[in-house]
Image (cartoon, rainbow, N blue to C red; front, side):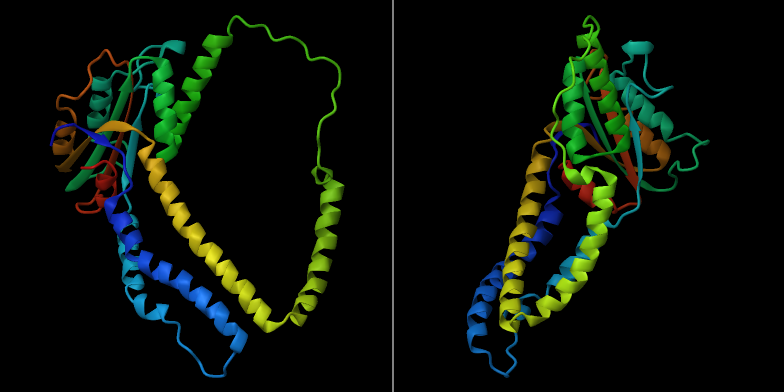
Length: 301
């Protein structure tokens, strides 16, 4: 396959698994309200939660989720600030987009790296490049939010530092003025923090006996309210994650398969950028055939 433009997105397969339990969670939240009203008239007769009948597919969804994301793979990241990869010296390090593609391909044939993948492979290559350091820094920050890979974070810190050096190289910081009042918290002092922790443990033990006097119905009502809050938080967390992926912006990707040599040849094919894009970073995810579904969906491949 050839390099193609793609928008980073939340994997549709994962979203489908999330959606598959939506009705159960929605009904469960409603049943909590019903359960709260039943607590006012407690009966010794056991009443099965009606939501349990609709939750039978949840275990299968959980197994599918494990299969989708429980994958061992290899990841290679190349960027301008790696020795032997980036070009230039000192503050003028750079890596053009075609050279980033070439670096990915060559690394697939590295016999000295003990983690070099072999056999029949499936691969997803990601490439993004900019023409200025400022744009490159912003791109690294956006990608790093969705993929907080250590190598990308290091490159992001390096570009930020270079930008600060450029902006501040002619600025001589002045000496600070006299002392100033600063807000502090008492427990920032070690003796106070240790004392609070030790005495707090004693009070917690005593409080444990006090709560035993709570009305059981009140405890159940509090527990039901906490469950409602938890259900709302679980859905909100997924929705926020989906939005975070969408904020990463478009990029260029390639899906490849075959032996390491065949994958390397596909990566070296004509790419979307030329050597005028002097700040590039590329990622290569490699796994066994059929195991990169989530990544392929993230990049719309």
